[in-house]
Structure formats: C-alpha cells, structure tokens
Length: 141
Image (cartoon, rainbow, N blue to C red):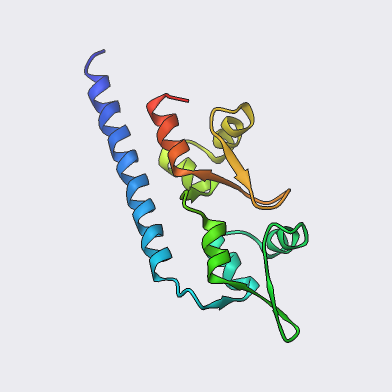
C-alpha cells in the first residue's frame, strides 16, 4: 500500500510541472503582444479560446471594452491582456487533461465548489485559474 503513494506523488508532480509549463507558455505569449495592436473579434476569440457569440455577449454586457474603427469594432492589446489577466486560466478540457479525468467530472467539481471557475459571458465557457488546479491537486482550499 505504501508503494502506491510515491507513484501518486510522482504523477501529481508531473501534473504540476505541466501546469507550470503551460503558465510559462502563456506568459511568453503575453510578452509577445504588442501594446499598440488592435485585434478583431475573431482574433480575440482564438486568443481567449471562446466562441464569437460568447465574445459578442460579453461586449454587449460591457465586460469587454471595444474601440470603433470605421464601422468595425476592435479590441486593444491592453484589453486582451486584461481579459487574460495576471491569473493564468485553463479551459475545462485543459483542466480535465491535467487532472486526468473527464470534462464532466471537472464541471461537477466546479458546480460543487471544489474548483473555482469564472465565465467571461453568462453562458460562455468556464475558465479555471492555474492556481485553482494546483490547490485542488494539493488538497487545499
């Protein structure tokens, strides 16, 4: 029975390393953003990994600030950076892959409050802070 604990600790260490690596990659992406760049809605959707209707809903609710350029709406790099935030986030699928469980299990953990998550729009996808995954794997709240 004791022999299973080192294997679990090793697996948890690997998952934590994967989370840290993902966090570093996203940090590098933020550093590469130009501060003066304007993004289209589709570009922001790809960056945030959300659907276009979710982004439009967030804009309509005032959660995303836009600039009108001619007849087009554009989103500044600073706004994209704010949306990504200083807290690095994962999608439900990314969190499920790191925790080695199914997507439904992660959603159930969010519903019961074991993992805290936020939504950009009311019905948009859940975003989970990397720190929340680390807390969950360590068993702390």
